[in-house]
Length: 246
Image (cartoon, rainbow, N blue to C red; front, side):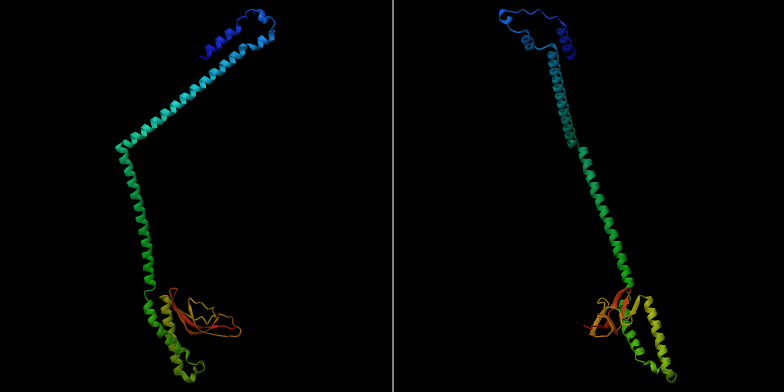
């Protein structure tokens, strides 16, 4: 179509111009004005090209719109066919069921592992503190043995009191063996006054406060009753006296 239009334009442009016949009304009109009023062949050709290109662009746009509309229609048709397909519905239902079952299995595994960890901790705690009640019953015997050794004056442990020395030595050996046995099972005794520890409310119980020169406030200076721990847990808090100078 475009080639035919171009050929016709070229033929019209190559034809020899007919002589101008001037009438009486137009004899007085200048020649330049008549020439400028009539469009040239080049201008006519350019206009025809522009109209042909515009028509082709419109045709392309129309074809693209029709293709898009056809594609949307095909897509809607395929979706409708999939929605109406019973096999597709069954497949979607099975996929949903698989997802739900997988989630349930994962939750069950996580709960089982948590239960395992909790059971291990409980079993370990039962092993560590199985002797807690028995250890508490031994505390009075250990305290009495400690008091017996503490009430013997050091100046009386001489050769003249050999029997007392032997008795004191036997009690001391018994205490050492007993404390080493308790330590093997996780039970230990602590005396805050020996190391002048700071008062710790988690491990100590302050029975009184008193000023002490040369010591910092809050420091333990006297142990009224020694404390015990079982596998790091306080079995009995130590009863102490605390420094308060202010």
